[in-house]
Amino acid sequence: MPSTENHVAIIGAGPAGLMAAEVLAQGGARVTVYDAMPSAGRKFLMAGRGGLNLTHSEALPQFIARYREAALRLQAAIEAFPPEALRAWCEALGEPTFVGSSGRVFPKAFKASPLLRAWLRRLDAAGVRFAFRQRWTGWDDEGRLLFQTPGGTSAVAADAMVLALGGASWPRLGSDGGWATILAGKDVAISPLRPANCGFTIAWSDVFRTRFEGQPLKGIALSFGPHGVRGEAIITRAGIEGGAIYALSAELREVIAAKGETILKIALRPDVDRVELAKRLSAPRGKQSFSNFLRKAAQLSPVAVGLLQEATISAGQSLSAMPPERMAELIKAVPIRLTGVAPIARAISSAGGIALDGLDADYMIRKLPGVFAAGEMLDWEAPTGGYLLQAAFATGVAAGTGVLRWLAR
Image 1: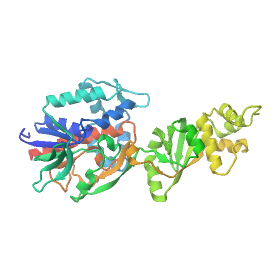
Image 2: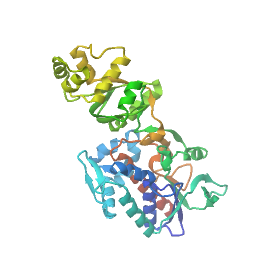
Image 3: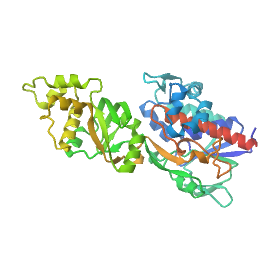
Image 4: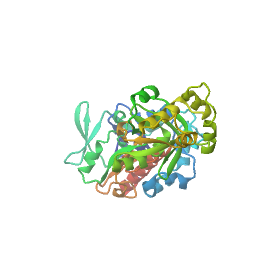
């Protein structure tokens, strides 16, 4: 077991860093957590605004597959600290969890702050020290960690360190991706940081943008090539975002990167077949306005009607002049031209980071002995639904355990 003389520095006070700190403190190491922000868990707290989706209850093989190309590399860490372990960990902190109707797992308090407070109290009792407003800037010639602080530059000696600095989404909360340049300078392979679970830009007309910005499209189905998903989306000033969009964002992002744009199709009434829709749209309109007729005949919301109008006008067509069969086809697959990817600063998470092949089985960076890495700064991505936080926690456990093994050797 490592002696308390072994000082381990954790850089980053998010879920991955805090979990590594907990594992290390329990293993007998002396731990200091450094963070550039004034307090811990800033992005974790923001994630809790929507209910804090901690993990998911689906079977582990399907769960691990959500990590796409990184699944095999993350498998051991997630199997060692699976969703059941994360739920038990929450329970031990006095924050029991429940499974929602979608299979997602939430704390019963439905927010992050009680869980974070209980966690920080436990870390404090375990002897973990925190140093805030400490921005890591690399190493000096003696291998000491360098920090930019309110009082100037400081150098800290550590026997090992865990990097858990996050990706590059929501930089105002601390994860700005600045570490990539530092590590690249040490010949560590870094995949470019890119938006994940992100929105996309669309050249809306001024009329549509002004009227429908912020409006949700509910109960829709999206399709893109062989990919499809059901859920909701939100019209933004610059384009579209929301859960259903995020689920396809990786595939959409890659095609836009290669071709500059792509077409996404939106089924506004996925549960009504085309023949039935055409029959409803063949009914007499009477004295109704065309928009009212569409809302009643096809049960379309005002924003859905607006989207139909937007698509037909941009194609140089007239929606009201369409035969019912063609209108039904359009309702089942409205083509929307995506012209770009929303900025990474607004993305839920980021893809890219430290290449997983550059880590050993204990999450140590091969090029930098004694330097371990965890969380979103690694090159993996996952959809929303609890997968992001689960991997952050699990890789934090893996890195902390790896440090203990390395120190023991």
